[in-house]
Length: 352
Image (cartoon, rainbow, N blue to C red; front, side, top):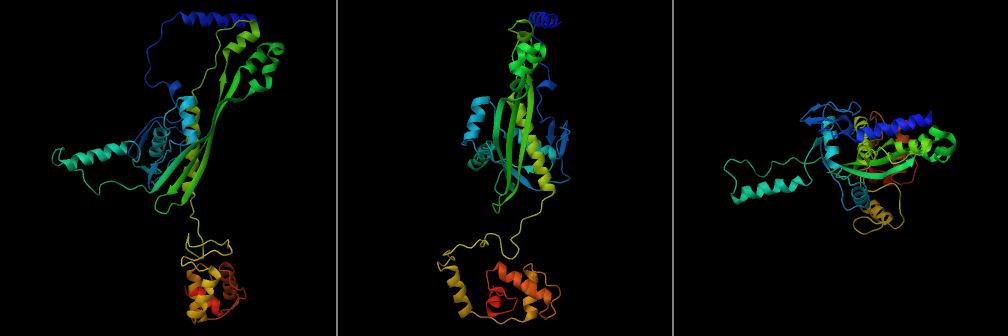
């Protein structure tokens, strides 16, 4: 039976070999990736049903693809793939979660048009000038962590049994899995703070017809993996990662330092670290305590604690249990003596 099947497959292959090539097909489903369809403004057509979508954009975004990194060179050299930016730009616009602004290669053309305007080469009323470009609120950086073909699958597990298991073993030996894992990081351009990061992954299975023929009847030459282009696997991985970014944006809650401004000094103290004036922290605090002592009422302290995020409730001017607890929390965060009292060092720190 297996020999009959093999001969039938060979006959079909020979018959197809004598046929003329078909004309190129416009919009071939077999050539599509996970990024399908189109986008124009807020509208999108033929979008992948698994792609997330937002009711309104969170801001403007620019893509940052560092072509000098090792992964990028390997990505292009090994798989002959192009930039990841076009696929991501399509996904972003289709999702309506961000508005894409140009900061890539077309930026040179934008500058060139403005230079032509300034030189007087363009027609009058061409309407190119300063103050027209839209700023990028965020930057999105893609990176391919891993992209490999034939990493796993039944071929690795059962391929060695091809001769003893007949067609089943040959089929098992002719299956390989292609995998890709990617990362996306989203950074706020004004502060430089990373606001979101997400990974994405994808895999597919390739089937080797030749393994079936060799394993079942000894015929070869009709084989070769179906060879799913690795770009399709990588595109699917980026679609997965961008969906994870969408979920992160929809559930976003900003990180907060609570009692102090972000970037003004962390809570992990380092001995000998200095203030901007060069004085050690302990010395600077001591100098401040002796030269600029302040007096503060309990009510004023309660108001300041509430302002800093230490919720003492109503400012009643009483040193009650809740107020004492919040003073202790404030003293602990500011590395003061923890006593729950409104002492001089605590008043000086509250007055800053």
